[in-house]
Structures are given as structure tokens and as C-alpha cells.
Length: 485
Image 1 (spheres, one colour):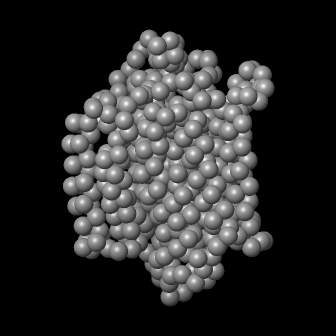
Image 2: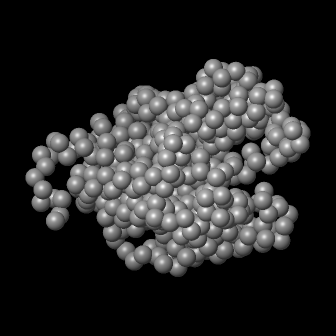
Image 3: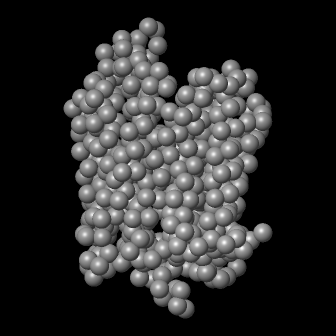
């Protein structure tokens, strides 16, 4: 039955749109993080090697990076609600498969299916732009952008608790149930947007982008393990340059490209994409380093020796802060414009890392520093889609935001590799094992804070749209044109 046939008062449907879509975004982030507490035990539980188990994370990263811009473009062409439901269904199916098996090959394939959920956020942002009245768009988009951090903050302690006190398959049954609820709510409450971008789907461009991104992100994610100078990694990077170069040539000559590169490289869109990459890098270092630092043995002189569950609780305030500060971001964007919000976010991010550099041995200082980083991330992440929405036509919002989310993903992958490289080169012996030094962690914080300041400079270089920024309608003005067309 079509949900349109179910009598739902229009005002109720409008009120449900934002929380239902936000729930889907939180689910996406939860699915990405729940496997983290399992990683140390999965070789024993599955009988697989640690290298094979690492693909439980890599497969989701690669699938999400490839599918986000592809599903965004498909949503613009064939219907955002339809593609959103498909992404949620794949995510839920992947969770069910994980719950049913201990075979590492099926687990990796199932985690790749869950990667499709990465497209939920850009598709939802596009739906919000099309469906909500102008005065609600800014706050709703800000909340939607923050769901990545909210879900990550909630997912880690939830997964840690389940893993510690129940069979590990229970965790995936729980996420399957949550996924089914999210899918059902979206089917019932979300209307199909009338805004479409007609044309023929660019299959060749999809293949080219997928191949190029797989080479690039596989090289970045496995470089530390395989060796940055190894033939495999060098070959992957060379392949990425060649394939993406040919892909760009094909996209510029296509009548209906998967990604409008002419639009994407312009200052109004290209600079927010660059800022997304830099912000993703700066944000992810906080999550990576904090989790390792607080679990480090007390004998290191800086570690707190916390359990996985306690670590999850330490990370929880970051998700709560992102939920609380998303309306603040929307108000700043309305008053001063989203590029100022993005710039302020970069400065706050850098300030958070300055606190972490000053003291990373006391728990309360760690919590304060991580909270400040989360606040800056909320401001930056909430402003990015607003910058994109005001710069692209209504028929390209899902694909353009899909590329922006992709840039965040690439930034996070590069951050993971860079942090790992820094920590590997700054170790000391403890009980016969090498552990990162406090200086290594401080260097990682310095690197992330510097990148955050570069993101600030990029934000200030984004062309201002003074009239729209003063009115706070930059993200919504094109919608009326699209609906009226």
C-alpha cells in the first residue's frame, strides 16, 4: 500500500519528517561504529586473521564512499524517497546477515551492504530542502548534518555494553530491529519529493568513479599495513590518478554526468567541498586518539586504563553536544551566514585541540577538550550543506550533498592513516610491547588543529551572498523556483 493512502494529517506529517529522517541519519552512524568494540575479539570469534577482520571496517568505508554520490544522483533523477528507502533496506539487510553468520566472508559482504546507509544524510537533506517551509529548513538541515556525530556517540557505548554482557550476534540483531523501525517510519512518514532532474543515468561514470575511489581509499586505508612504498599501495595510487583523470575527462564531455564537475569545482561549491574534506580530517582525529588514549595502560604515565564500556561512556557526551548545538549553528547561519558558521567551527575545533595539547592526562580535561572539538564539528558540519544548497539547482541537491559527504569520508580516511603514521613513529617500550608516547598523541592533535585552521581559511574564501545570508534564505530560495517550474 502506498503510504500516501494512509490518512496522515498534513501538519502531523510535516512534524514527523525531521525526526524520522534524523533517526535514519543516527542509525547510519550507529551502523558504522558498532563493530569497533568487536574488532579485537573478532579473529577469535570468526577464526579469521586480524587482516581479514579489518575489512569489516574497510568494506563499509569503500561501499559508502562509492555509493554516496551514486545514490545521491539516483535520488535526484528517480525520487529521493525511493532511493532513501532502498539505502535503509540495504543497511538493515546487512545487519541481519551479520546477525546470522560467523563466516568472515559473509560478514565483510554484509558490512559492505551497510555502507549504502552513507547516502541517507545527503538524500535526507535534499528532501528537507524540498519539503519544509523556509523558516524550518536551516535548523532541520543542521540537525541532519549533526546526526553523524550523534550516532557515533551513541553507537559506541551501546555496542560496548552488548558485547561485554551478551553474545556478539545480539548486537547485530539489535541494529537489525532499529533498522527495520527506521525503514518503516521513513516509508510511512516521508513523502516523495516532486523535484526531479530528468535524464539518463551515467553508468560509465558510475563505474569509473567506483574504480577510482576504491583504488584511492584502499591505498589510504591499507597503506600503514602494506607499507606506503610497497608496490601494491603505489600501484593503487597510480591507478586512482589514472582512472579518476579519465573519469573527469568523461564527465566533462557527458551530456548527463554523474557529477557536474563544472559546478563542483566552482568557488561556491568547490570550496565547501574542500572544507568538508579538511573538517572531516580534523574531526576524526579526535575520535581516533581519544579512544586509544583513555584505554592506554596507567603505566604509560598518561593512560587511564579504561575499559571499552567506560571508553564508550567517555565518548557519549560528544554525541549529546552535537545534538544540543545543531540549533545554535542554524541560528548563527541565519544571522551571519553559513560561511561564517563554518569558519567559527574551524576556530573552535582548533581551540579544542589546543586544550588537548595542553593536558591529555586528566579525564576532566580530556572531556572538556573533546567537547570543544565536538562543538566545532557541529558548527562546521551543520553549515556545509547549507552552503551547498544555496549554490546548486534544486534538481542537483542530493548529488551535490552526496559529493560533500564523500569529501568528509575521504578526509576521515586520510586522517586515520595520518594519525596512525604519527603514532607508529612515536612509540616507547612498555612490558616488551610498543605503545604510542604522549608526544605522539600531542603531534596528532597539533596536526588536526592545524588542518582545522586551514579549513577556517577556506571557509572565509567562500564567496559571500550577503542578501541571502542576512535573510537566512540562502538554502531555500531555489526551492520555490523548482516547485513552481
